[in-house]
Length: 272
Ligand SMILES: [Zn+2]
Image 1 (cartoon, rainbow, N blue to C red):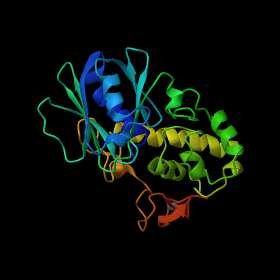
Image 2: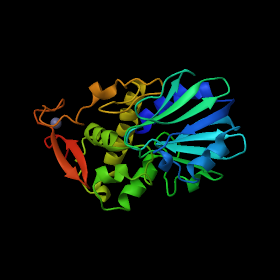
Image 3: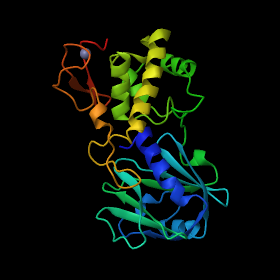
Image 4: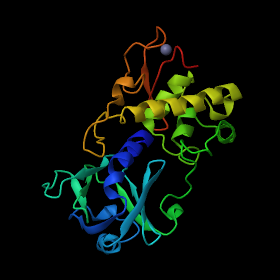
C-alpha cells in the first residue's frame, strides 16, 4: 500500500500538471463505480467536470484536491491505486479505472488493480477521513504527542504506528523500518517506552520517511509514481521482506511474525 513517501511523491509529480487547470471531462469505467463513496459515480463525474483545481495537498495517505467551489476531492489509493500523468491520446491501461481530462489536455489516469481506492467530494475534509491524527510531517506530530498517545494505549508499538489516529501516513513498511531504526521490538507494549525511546522512535519515523521520499518511494509490488515508474527505495529496507537475511547491525537474522494480523519483520537480537 502506498504510504506517506509514495503518496507525497505522487503529489509532487502530478501537482504541476493540475493546479489552476479545469477538469474538462471525467471517465469512470464500467466495473469501477464503487470507487465513488460520497456520491454515485455519475454524480461524481457531474460534480467534478468544470471545476478548477486550485491546489493539491496531502494528509497522511490521502490526496486532497482543492476545488474552486471550496470543496475538496479526496482520493485514497488504498492497496494498489496510482495516479499517473499521461498524454491526451494514451490508450486505456490494463488496470485503468478512471481518467480525468484537463483543459490543458493533460490526462490523469487512476490505475487500481485491486479496486480498493476511494474518492469523496466533501465540504469538510474530516467527512472523508474521520478520526485522523496529525500527519507525520506536520508540526503537531511532536515527541510529546507521540509519548502521550503511546502511553494511553497498551498495544504493540508496531500496531500503534499503524493507527492513523496516532500518526497519519505510516503503513506496514515504514512501521517495521522505524522500529528497526530505533532498536525497538515491534511487539513491545506501547505504554512501556521511556521518553528516551519515544524520542528515538520519533526521530526514526522521520528519518525512514525522509530516506524513502528522497528515493521516490518504495516499490515491492504495485506502487507506481506520478509518471508511472517504480520507486527506488526498496534497496534501503533493512527488515521489511528481509526475513532469513543477516541483520545489517548485528549478527542476528531477520524474522517475520504476525502482529495484529500484519506481517512484521524485525531482528530479535538487536530490537529489544
Ligand atoms: Zn540485529
